[in-house]
Amino acid sequence: MKFFVDTADLDEIKEAESWGCLSGVTTNPSLYAKTGGKLADFEGHMVKICQICEGLPVSAESTAETTEDMIAEGRRLASLAPNIVVKLPICEASLPAMHTLAKEGIRVNCTLVFSAPQALLAARAGARYISPFVGRFDDIGDEGLDHLEEMIDAVHNYSYGYWDEEDGPEIITASVRTPHHVTQAALLGADIATVPFGALKKCVHHPLTDRGLELFAADWAKVTAEA
Ligand code: G3P
Image 1: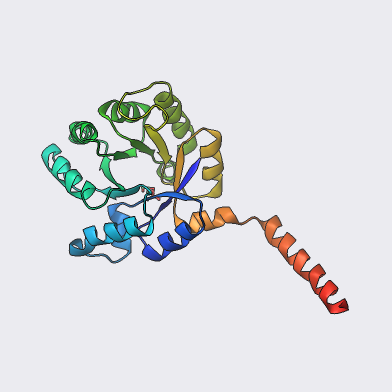
Image 2 (image 1 turned 180 degrees about the vertical axis):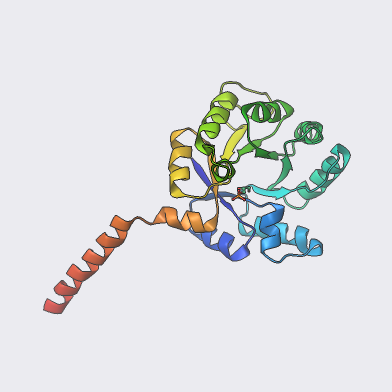
C-alpha cells in the first residue's frame, strides 16, 4: 500500500516527503483553509506542493458546482503542474465532468465516497482515484472499515478501460485517523492510504520501539562508561 499525506501544510509536506516513503499528497478546501490560505493564493499554494513533491500526484479540489464549471476548473487546475490530480466530489454534476476530464487524460480523484455504488459509478465515469472515507463513518457510530472493504472489493472486481490495468482506478483510503485504520486498509487491499501528518507520525512509533531505544541507550551508556 502506498502512503499519501493528507494535508495542505507545506512544512508537513516537506517533512513527510523527506522520509522517502511518500507517494502523493491530497488536499481539500478544509485543509487549505486550515493553513490560513486565501483564495488568491490557492493556485500558487498548489504549485508549491507540486514542486516539493515533484512527480508525485497532488490532489487539488475543485469547489465548482456545475458540470461545466468543474470541467473548466479541472482543466485549469491540471494546467498548473503535470502532477496535479483534480479532486471532485461524487455527485450528479461531477460524473460527466470526470468522464470528460478522463477522456482528455486528466486524472480525477473522486472524493466524499461513502458507498460501493458511488465508487463503481466513479470508476465507470473514469476516475483515476476513488477516495472512500473511513473516519467519518466511525464519527457517526458506524464501521468505516466495513464500508471500505465493500468499496475495495466492488471496484477491484472489474476493469474500466480508462487507465492502465495496473494503474487504476486506485482506491485511496481517506478520512484516516489512526494507525489501526492504516493497518486494516492495507490488509483489505487498499491501493493507497492518505494519512494526516499527525497520524502518519504515529505510524512510525510503537511503545516497544521507544522502550527498546531507551534500553539500548542505557546499555550503551554502560559500555561507553567502561571505555
Ligand atoms: O481528504 C479527505 C479526507 O481525508 C478528510 O478526512 O478527517 O476530515 O474526515 P477527515
